[in-house]
Length: 184
Length: 284
Image (cartoon, rainbow over all chains, first blue to last red; front, top):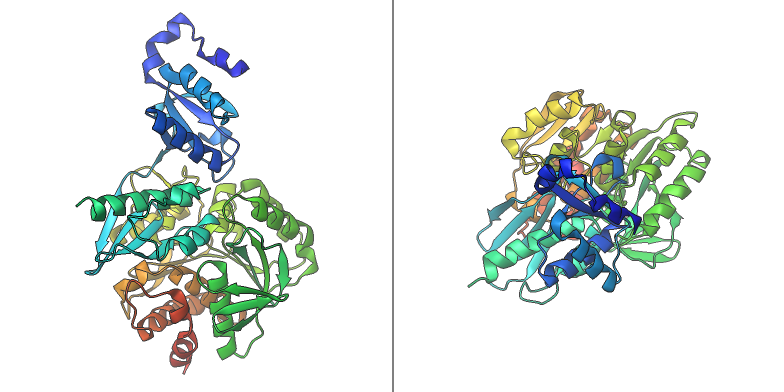
C-alpha cells in the first residue's frame, strides 16, 4: 500500500487537486469490470476509462475515481477482495474516454444498437436478441453464442461474463437496448 | 498454404493445428467439432467454401479456446512465435485473439525471420494488436469496418472502444479516416473497408467502391465481416492480385447475403452456404 503516499500532495499542488483524477489499475479487464460493479453498487461515482499510454498493456481498462474518495474506495475494495495493482493520479485530458454515444438503426421489426464497435439487434415484439455483431476480442463470439436467443428482460447481463473492452461495449449496447425497448 | 489463426469461444478447447474439413455447418479438426456460428470458425468456413470453387486445398489453421480471459490467446501467441518457422504459408490470416502488444510483437519477430514473408492479413483482435504495436506497415491487408477504421485513424486509441470524437464514424467520414490512418502509419498497403459501401484502398487511394447489391440487414448479422475476410484470404491464396481479390470478395459477400434473403435475425451459417454460388456467378 506504499502507493497511498501519492495522496500526500504538497500544499502548492493542492490548488489543482480538484482537477486531478485517480486511476485504479488492475491485473486484468475482468477485475476492472468486477470492481466497477462493486463500487457502483456501493454508490461511488466511478467510470471505466482507458489507461494512459505509459501504463497500457493492450486491451485494458482502468477505473477513474474521484481523488477525494480514493482512501475509502481502496479500503472498500480491500474488504471485497478486489485490490488494484496500482493507483495513479492524472489530469482529465490524459485519460482516454470510452465511447458514450450510441447509434440506433430501426429495421422495422428489429432494432439495432451500436456502442463503439459492438452491435446488438433485438426483435422489437418479442424482445429477444437475434444477432450480435462487431468486435474483435475473444469474448465476443462467446458472449454472442450466449446472448442470441436471450430476452432483454432476462436478468442476465453480458457484463457478468465480459472480460474485454469489446465485451464491455457489448454490455453498454445491451443496456441501451434495454433502456429503449423495456422502459415502457 | 493458406494459414489462419484465431480463437474458438470454448475455454476447454486446447490448442490445435491442422487442416479442418467443413461438414453441415461444423468444422472438424483433430476429431473435434466446431460449430460455424461466428468468429474465426466463420472465417475458416468461408475460406473453405471459396477454395472449393477454386479447386484449392483447405487452409491450415491454428486454433485455441479463449472466452476473453486471455490464457488461450497467450498460448497461441507463444506457440506461433516458436513454431512459425516450420511452415511455409503463401497467405497468412490473423483473426480473433486477445489484443496483446508483447504477444503480437513476438509473432511479428518470428515472421521477420522467415526466408519468405507471407502475404499478411489481419482482422479483429489481431488487427487491433498490430496497430497498437505500431506494425501496421508490416502487414499487407487489413479488413476493418468503419468503427475499426476510425480506430486505425486515431493514433492515440488503443482499442475501438475509446473515442476522441469520431469513433461513431459514418459513411461520410470514411475517406477522411482513410487519409488519417495512412498519415499516422496505422494502415498497411491494402485496406478493404467494410460498410454500406465497401472500399478497396491501396496506399491511401480508393481503388474501387462496391455498393451493390445493398442489403441493409447484413449489418446486423454477426459474422458478415468474418465471411468477407475468409473469402478475400482464399482468393489471394488462389492467386488473384490483392485489388481484384478484394473487389470479388466484397461483391461475393454481398451477393451471398442477398441470395440468403436475410432478415436482421438471419444467422451467418445460412449465408455461408451461398458463398460458392456467389463466387461462381462472379467468376463465370
